[in-house]
Length: 276
Image (cartoon, rainbow, N blue to C red):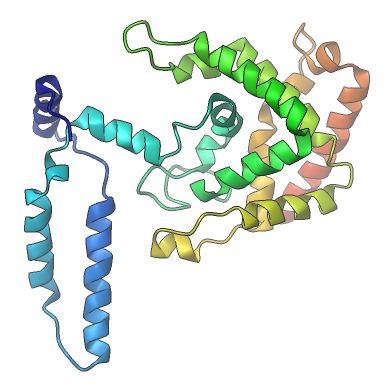
């Protein structure tokens, strides 16, 4: 817990303006426990005053140090919980998935309007594992070094932290994603087979669900197709570009043909699965 007076002042100002710590895990845990306790009591023929328990739980939370946690500290913990402290390459790799991922405390399908099936953040380890498997260790390490150099070029002069919006807007970030995508789609000549493989890798790397709604969420073929559509957007833009960074100029005409076959197969699968 922070003892920085500035942090406490920030927390007070945020509280007055209606900004609160978004770390709701303790609240959710207590709410789930109360429901579980009440159901267990009912199953044994006993009665529990749920409202009274909720009142006690609220009082407990107000007395807990977390309630007074400074907003900046809370945000740092939130960033860690959301996987925002991923290594630079992993963070850059999954950034195109952000529109499909729920905000912290949310659930799949509720974060933002989208035509895609929503993903869970639990897919991130599997996406990274599958990418590394397709690229191979040597190329992965090359990409990791490029990502680290890119991130290091965008450090805040005041905080020393990586300024991610600048990283994502950097031309080198786009080129890195295009180069990674070319290494990945080379494995998708047999699209149905590779899609099934991708689903199996992600499924096998899903961390345990931490909420009842997450336990009801399953990674399906529609999710896998939506994931590929999102991850391949930088490559699709490069495919349609004829400037110096266009796919033909960067990787040659054979790469253009490979990308065209990949997108034909992906778009056909998306059409059949009604993923737009």
